[in-house]
Image (tube, rainbow, N blue to C red; front, side, top):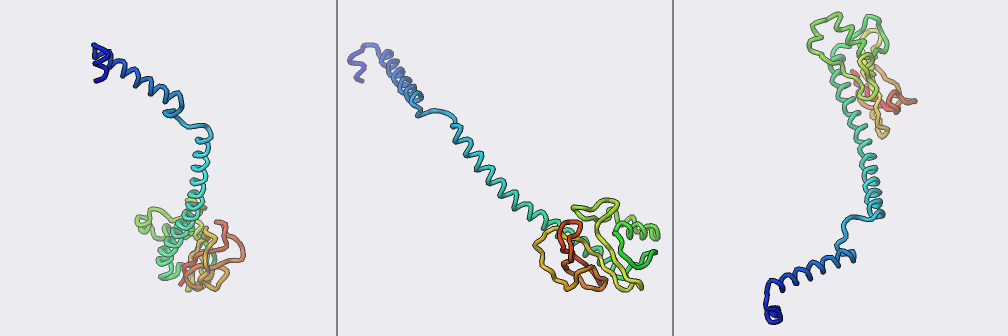
Length: 193
């Protein structure tokens, strides 16, 4: 209301007030009070923090991934082992060690009707291929004892069997060999009758 006393035109008073308000905000911007953006140092610090956090997460995920692959190996070997151990399959070549792909192909030749039930031959998630599953079947000469085994990937395993080589009739569980296998550890999971 003071403006009405000194000035007879109220719109000029309001124009002066708008100018003062704009001038006030311009001073804030010039002084850095409303400055937009981040400095280079602030940006680099944020990037460094993100890099450290992502590396920690990545390291923890790698351990989880190898444990998940080992779990898959154990489940597949157990399921196939139950099928093969019911009555140990003795291949035409007799006693010995065979890749699961070799055994499956021989069974499919003898019994083609089984092929419609098995669409994919399981294979090691890290090193297995369509030609070589890396799941190994071992059988003794008379076909009464057999085992199926796979090399595990996680080096933090605990042995549950007292053997150090795959042994038909040696039990089901984890054993530690004297040297590393194809997945880089000395630990194997065996399913046996």
